[in-house]
Every structure is written in C-alpha cells, then in structure tokens.
Length: 275
Image (cartoon, helix red, strand yellow):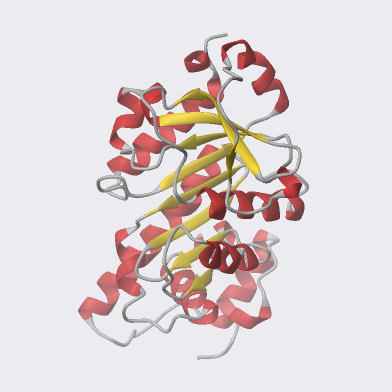
C-alpha cells in the first residue's frame, strides 16, 4: 500500500488541518506525533528507506524501543501538511536502546522531526505505560484562550482545572482527571520534557504557560476533541472575565459530585474544594 493511502496517515493529516483551521498553528507552531500500530507499519513498510542514518533523540526512551512514529517536521507549517505531506511529515523508527531514531519515509526535501521530539517521546513512553498501550497520540498546539489565561490565573493544577470545569458541564466528563500546569520553560529541551512527563502520569492535558497545551489520547478524534474542549472552555472563561471579574453563579462542588455520580466518572478530591 502507498503510505498516503493508509488510514492512519489520513487521520493524522486531518488533525493537522483541523488544528490549523482553528487558528492554533501560526507559522510553524505546534507539533503532532502518533505511535503507529504494528499492522499499520506492516501495511506500508515496503515504502521504507532503511539507508538513512540513525540520529540521537536527545533522551532515552527504552519503553519505546523498536516502535514506529508518524511525526511532523521541525520548522514545517501545519498548513502545508495536507498540501504536501511527504515534504512536511515523516515516519521514524526508534532503535533497540531507545536512544536514536531514523527517518524511514517523508521529509523528502530534507529536515528532521519536530524540535519537541524529546518531549513527545518521553510523554509517549509515560502514556504507553500508564494506559497499557491505549494512548497513541501526542498533540501540542497554541490554543489562544488557554495561553491568555496563563497570564491572569495562578499557575496551579487546582485553579486551572476548577475554572475550566466550571465553564462547561461536559468538561469534568471529557477530562475528569483535570489538567496540569507547567510554568514557563524553554521549549524543546529536556527540562520541559521531564516536567511534562511527570504531569502526564496524572493528566491527559498539560498547559504550558504562555505557550499552549500538550495533550494525549487514544486516537486522533479523541485527542483533537480533548484539546478543542479545553480551549472552548478557556474561551468561555475569557469572555466571562471580560464581562465581570466575579461570577454571579457557577457549577458548584455539589453539582460536580452529582455529575460524577450520574456520569460514573471519578473526580479527584483536590479539585472539589469549596469556593
């Protein structure tokens, strides 16, 4: 099968396009990676070029040894993923030590995987272990309203989770574990990768202060839907705060407990404080 005919490639491209259309990927902003299933690899491996050199990842991810990933390219524009995927994305393989990768397909005009590859792979490793392999997508985007809130809300998991939950009834159901928050750090390095992977042990969403969000999910639809829900909640909160700084009414702690009971979700007690 041609790589571009594979359904996992089509889903990847669709997410990239949807994210661009939301306005979350100015210029070359954001990145996306997908841990490819064995049967998907087998369906397209006849197209692989195994002559490319092994390159250092910049970290060690032993839990991802011999795995394959579909990734966006460093400096590439999400806008162009749909227009010319073979130039802007790549399939890579991880070596048996989890220390190097090589490009098997894509980036045909040169380049390398996203500069956030260490963050992505360290978080893939965590989510693979935490979900028994169910999570396969890591998505980073520059969600406008979430970024705005990182300038005016305390940068704590408790405050961000509770405020976002209160903005839309579906939020505690879509992300019942809450969201984590990383204070501003230089992107692309090991420090932010470590900080985010620690949060990913508890959450599926990490907010990067003044930068965007980083989220994990089982497939493209669920991961994009998670990012979309968080950003829409943030948009509502920005509008509420612009109207008046204090709310006349909101979803209460008791309401959250009732919601959790009826929808059969578990909400962490750390977010169910009385206000």
